Length: 265
Image (cartoon, rainbow, N blue to C red; front, side, top):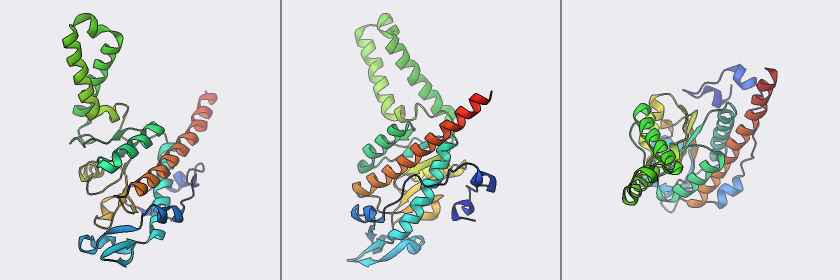
C-alpha cells in the first residue's frame, strides 16, 4: 500500500485507487527546477523543528538544507491526491496570505476556477460556514442589485457610492470564496505557520491539507507535507504551477466521466 493510502485522515480504499487513471502523474516533478528555484534552502538551524529531521539533507552556513529527493516524493504524492480530488468534482481551497504568496496563489486558483483566501483567514471560514456563507450571500445580492441598476434607481449617487465601497470592502475579504459551493475536498497552503488557523479548521472537520512545509514548521500538522522553502518567490511559483497543473488535469478527467453519465441517461 502506498504512503498516500496509509496517510491518516485521507485513506483511500482499493476501489478508489483502481477506478480510472487518477493517480497517473499529469506532470513530472523536475528536481533540477526545484534546485534552481532555491527550494532546498531552509531556515537557520536554531529555528528548526525536530519533526523536519527526516527531510533535512545537511547544514550549510548555519542553515538547514532540505533533501530535494524528499521534496519530489512529497510533491508527487500531493499532486496525485489533488488530481484525484479534482477529478472527483471536489474543490481545492488555495490559501496564501503572506505577501510573497498572495498574487501567485490567487492567479493559480483563478486559472483553475478554485476558491482562494489571500488577504486574511477569517475564523470559522470552514467550521462556521453558515455565518460566513451568509456574508457571502449578502455580497452577491449587493453585486446583483448594483449590476441590474436597482440601487442606482432607488438611491442617490452618494448612497450608491457607499454601496460600492461596501461591495469593494467585502470583496477584499470574501471575494475569493464566493464560488465555494460546499465543503472543499482539500486545502492547499503555502506556509504552515502563517496559515495555522486554516489548517486547524480543516483538520477539525476532516479536510485533507496539502502544504509547503519549511524547516521551522511541524510537518505532522498537515496531511500531505511538501518539504521546501516557503519564503522564496521562485519556489512558491514553481510549486503552485505544479498544483495548478494537477488540479487542471483532474478537472479534465472529471469531464469525460460526467459526459458519460449524462449520455447514459
